[in-house]
Image (cartoon, rainbow, N blue to C red; front, side, top):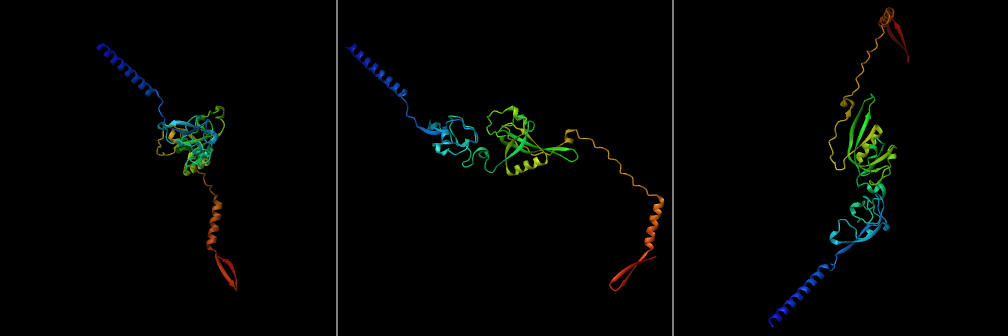
Length: 284
């Protein structure tokens, strides 16, 4: 009898443990309810400057806890905005990657409020052999040649952003290296005052762009211009020729000139008035 009770108790305990294990397993493996939300994403690759259309977008579902800042819950909030940073297919569209609403498309969409876009002509040398691309940072050097043949160079702008190189706006686009020898233009993002400096510098001399490290945003104090003398190769000054000697007049001409001057000193002028008429007579 005692043995039967032990077996029953053991059976009940085993069955209870089995049921508890099954309940825990079902609880842990059952799908949990998701707190999800739909957001706007790119349906295709969107290059810089493109004005977004409805066909360029799609809705994707994300967990609310995983949402990044600046998402759009409706595609209508994105349509008409221009792309400021390349967006790839399937990527969530963020407000930080779009130009300001109403700023237009193309290059104008990349011009920040209060800034200006100015272009400078470059070639393989002044354009750093084509390594200057949209999004890179450059310094602008100005060189002027003077009338005496000397020249000087000065840095007029520092840490300037390149908006476009030629007609290229996308920094990830491939560049045809065969085109680097052809003159093209680099469009810079500057203030109004800086734009005036660039335009004047192009009229008075030559412009050279200097490529910067993208992580280097230090702006140094503007130094004095660098001239040929600072390089130790100043052209030696040529000796000036002596002034030409004044010709000495012959003695007889001096005598005649002195006699004429003395005669003029001894001559007096007498003015004679007859009615409204006046005449002069010389008397020695």
